[in-house]
Length: 547
Image 1 (cartoon, rainbow, N blue to C red):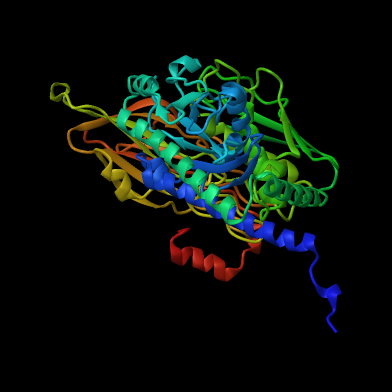
Image 2 (tube, rainbow, N blue to C red; image 1 turned 60 degrees about the vertical axis):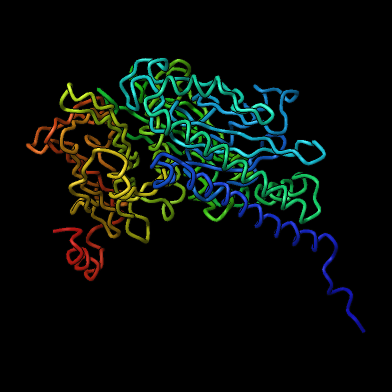
């Protein structure tokens, strides 16, 4: 006799089907991101993965994101797509459309990131969702990528939400406007085409998937994903004792140090970050739109509480933020925000430091935090040569903080997540020579678990050129702090080959024939250094991590 009770129910079989579809959807957005990497002109996208890609339901709620990407892009893009729907207007959304913007408050926080959104329609003409992607472009006009502007209008061309393509027809007027306002026109316009192409790949693959599974829209699958993600997120939050947790962090700022302050409130409904007490807005472009601060707060909490959970509308929903007007983490139009990543990246460690009071065995020590981006305009040292300037951008990372049971990661971008750019790829794009790139010994904070090490990068212009570059570095005056008795990481340094120190922020010049050295900061240590096992101390010496 057959035991019919052992057979899965119809709902159980459907859950299995939906799980398969969910896995397939992840492969769709991964292919979407890979298309962008393959078609991008900028090395920051091709080599470093400074991008995001995702699929959204018809209401603009993010269902899935590609693993490749940064929290600052992904989590702000999750809030951006509803702006596209509202600004374009549902009645003006058509098959073949492509939309874009770099508005800092409707996109990802500064003008250098361009977000492109593409609607998805069935063959019957029904709107079922959207694909969106974001990438950092090498130039957007204005003063160039750097913190020196005093208002948004100096930082480059601002593109409101508008149509890049209308029912399949390219908006050539917009292309002309963008080309006329940026220094590296072919690269910038090429990257926008790459963004549109990656969304088109996602659109086609999604329709193929729906056809294969005999589905007419994304609604059932999105509901399945949201329900389970929401339940898992709330379950993870239950492990955090309810209450309020406060933390402060001092960072370099531009001319004056900046005090970052957060108070986290944990309730049964979720977690809220209030940035009251943070330093006031800067006159320079280091200010941070609140949506960008929220992106890195949410990221920090999710990796601490539920690192295996997917990142989507439902996992982001329980985490909210607030900040009074006039603080540096709540910039509003037309505040300058070009290098909002420098302070924005510290929000993760700031908030982790607060929740460490509740989860002392989970949260790492502070790390280098902000990327040490090197953005330069390489110009001929001989004005009569009339050579056009070349825009160069490379990403560099210091060490991350030591973890409760593991050492910190060396020369690793946390919380950004971008990859290290190879020397060969950087030198290939313009007149730059990278003379040295190596791990910086003695830069990780001492502890039972050692902080991640920074790196030393020595850069010079090629023969016949000089660099005008915008410094956007931090942790020079205020190194990463250790935790639970661990030592601080080493502070960063910037100087010419003759020892002349350079400022951590602002536009400066590397003359022809000279070299600039960047010593990137290390991460803080965790635990008492006397408790570090002798064999690990010996290995540190053998590897050259310490002398």
